[in-house]
Each structure stands twice: as structure tokens, then as C-alpha cells.
Image (tube, rainbow, N blue to C red; front, top):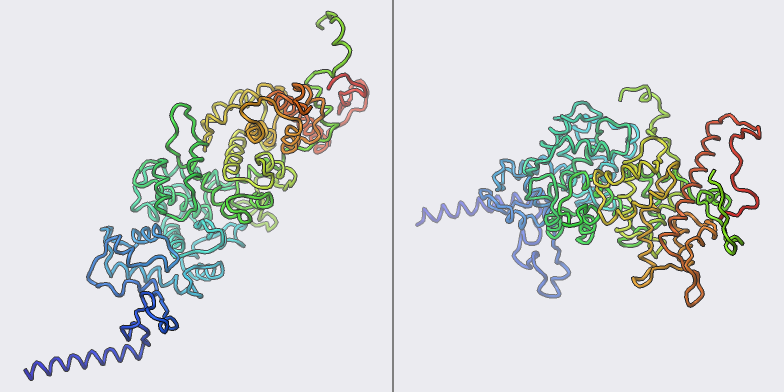
Length: 624
């Protein structure tokens, strides 16, 4: 007994010495040195309230209390992680588990976690100076620039100044530029794949891109899509019409988009997102992207090309287009929740991630003509004003990378197009798709506007950003289905309008938007029992379309009479047809005159061969 007693006493002394040593090196606090009060639960009396202070351990040490020989399943790891304390969502915590599980056995042991923490969590915590588990731009800048792998990247000159904020926005859906650990980990993964797969320091080739995607994000995601098509999709969405390979910013953006696409599409491995899986991913909050169920339903309605069976799949190209718009909406929709004001819309068009071809198409369009220009254009209708001939017999008549620009500092922000901001045109584009509230867009307005604008720019044949009416008549029905995202059959009702336009003219994106959206405008003003529209409503719609000075004589061609309040009433289809024809012709005349001035074409002043020609309309004209 004495011998056993001495052994126990010696062991106890050694433990006390060890505890004292630990206490000397690491000051003990709260439940580390006493049982009560329990800091993990709510205070049990008033006295404890003053000293109660729940604090989470560092993320790198969150599994220290667990049995070091035990392996944790995913749900056990999630519960122990207490992800809420580290600004993570449950879905992000699950993705962290999938990546940290080095041997891919769906179990987390202490050795795997220690290795993962040493490589990723400790550097993140070192960068997080204010210990809020969110990196702001300054913290991320210091962290990124001191990462050895960042030295293997050469950024394009136009991205050099804002490269850190651009990278942060590319991998996050937060309005404010902040990264949590999940976002930071994603950038680290992208850096590793870039270094190990890249073809050069500035751009990544198609083959290297396939290697990078498989290395960084597709280890556990059984994605069966064509990675070359995904590469081509992001070349198309890169906002640089002349770019032939992805730079690091667009590479990071494409990788995150594929990451979200694959996460939302699970467990199906096809290169489509099933609508049910998309909605399920939102309900489960797999990734914090701020999608709403109503929003997802509307996106599938926009691409529903089958009139008999609702579309239930969305391909990658359509998802990438909508996902980019979704992130931009969240970034700029600040003043009014879930709405976008006109000023926010103007800022959005200037964002480096907004599709530049759409912005340029808006800026080079023609709109808001004066009455004289409309008067000249309205001759195309060949319709006369009311006159005395109506009261007499009609008389029959006879029927008779290593380029030179790299070394020139003035070409840093040069693009394929000459880009001049046109605030007036942007305001008209905004008002064209706005509803009764003229100052904001809903998400439905937002997505429909840019989906249709994307259709227009996909049909553009050259740098003028205008399309002939014959091209619309011949190709539009095919293009409705071929474009990504495709146009739903419910949005194809306006096709006959293009057949009414003169074959000799071209139309720009503002005229196109007016044609495609005028029926939606009616829904705000017409009731189901009324097939005419009042004059004040017609003029309000024309104001939205940039046709404020449209002559009343053109409107009166579609006049139906008066209502009981003696308000003029009009047949909607007829009045819009006449106004759109006159507006399109006025735009074509304006472009022709600008063409003569821009290129200083030779004039001919002889009356027998005048160039530019005189106005067609006489000073006293019987035509409307």
C-alpha cells in the first residue's frame, strides 16, 4: 500500500508541476482554472453577469478539446466547429471539411486538421489584425502580397491598381469588400492551381485552365461538363472583346462561378443545374449567394423556350451570365432593399465587371429627337392629315500580349471599342424597363433588361452596334434559342413588329428595347376589360422610351375616339407601331448625318445633285 501510495503521490505532484508550468506560460482564465461560473452557458445570477464573457477559441485550435485519436464525421465536425463564431455559414463549413479531409475518407482526424490549420488557418489569423475573422482590403492586400505564390502572377496593367479589391469581389457575394476564411481559402486554392498549371505568369491557356479547375475545386465535385466550353464562356464574359486568354482576375472569377455552379448542382453531375436542386441549395444555404426562391423561379421563366413543358434545366453559360448580374445587383442595390435606383444603375454600368458591349450599345444609340426630326421621319408613314378629300369623290389616278502597346503607358485602359459614357442614353434605357415607379428597378426588370440587351449584342455584326431590320426578320427566331441565356417563348410576341419597319434602316439597342418591352409597359396601365389606352398613358410611355417630342399627328393615326371623360383613346398596337417606325427612321437619319460629319464626306452644293440632301418635308405638307 505504501508503495502504491507513493506512486500516486509522485504522479499527482508531476501533474501539478505540469499545470503550474502551463499556467506560467499561458495565463488561465474562467473555466480553465475554475468550474463555476459556466462561461459556455447563460449566467445563473446577477453577480455572474458582470464577469460572464463567452469567447471562442482560435479557429486553428477549435478541435483541441476533442480526443486526438478520434476521427470526426462531417456533422460532428460542423457541430464542434461552431462556424457561426467565425463568420462562416454551415455550407461554407461543409466545404472547408471537404477540402481539409486530405485522404478523402470523409473523416477528419487531428493530424489532418493540424496540417490544414498550419497551411491555411494560421496565415489567415495572422493577417486578421482586428480578430473579427473578416479580412478588409488592407488586411488582404498585406496578406496576398506576402504570399510567395503571388510572385508567380503578373496582373494586366488595367487591373494593377485595383487588383486586390477585384480579387475580393470575384470570390465573394458580400456587398462590402470583406473576406471570411472560406473566401480566403478559395483564393489560396486558386493560387496553388495557377502556379502548378499555368502556361505563363500573365494568362492561363485552355489546357492549363482544365488542369487548374480539376486541381483546385473539382476533387469531390463530380462535374461532367466540358471545361473547354466553360473557358470559352468566360472569355466571352471577360469584358475585353480582344482578349484571347484568361488573366488571373477572370480566371479567379470563372473558378468561383464554376464552384458555385457545381455546389448548387449537387448531387447531379450533368453540366446543367436542375431547378429543384437550385432551389434546394438555397433552402440549405450551401453558399451565401443571396439568391431568393422567387428570383430563381423567375430566371427559369426567362429561359423557358418550350411552350408545352416548363424548362427545368439551366446550362452553365446562362448561369454564368445571370450569376454575374446577380452579384452586381447585390453590390449596387443599397439605397432601397431589393430595388435598384437610377443613380445606382448609372454606377453599375461603370463597373469593370459589367458587360461592356451592352454598355457601349446603349451609349452609341440615338434617342430624344426634337419635333423637327420626327416630322422629317414621319414621312415614311405616307399618311395624310385629315383634309377635304374625305368629303368628295375619289378620282382614279395613273400608277406611275506581346504587342507594342504593352510598352506604352498611355494604352493602359485601352479597349477594343472607343468607350464614351452617354448619361442620357443610359437614363432612357433605365426608364424603358421601369414600371409605374420610374425611379427604381425590381429584380425582374433588371434581369429582363440585360437578358434582352445580351440578345441584341450577340446579333451585332460590326463596331457600329446597330442591326438591320432584315437581319432581325431573318435571324431573330433562331437567335432566341441559340443565345445564352435563351429567350423564353413568352417574350417572343414582339417579333411581328420588326416586319413593319422599313427594310432600309438599322436599329440600335434603345429602339430594340422599346420594341421588346412595350407590351410589359401596357400591363401597368391596361386592365383586362379595356383594349384602348388613354392619351396621358401613351405620352408617359413615350417619355420613358425617349420619344417625348413625338408629333401628336402620328399618335392620332391610331385614335379610336373618346371615353366618357372625353379623354382621347388609342389602339395600343397601332400607336406603338407608328411611333416606333417614326423613331427608328429618325435615328437612321441622325446616324446618316453624323456619318457625313464624322468622316467629312465631300459635299455637293448643286441643286440638281444636292449632297447631303435637303429635308424631304415641304414647308406646307399634307402628311402627318
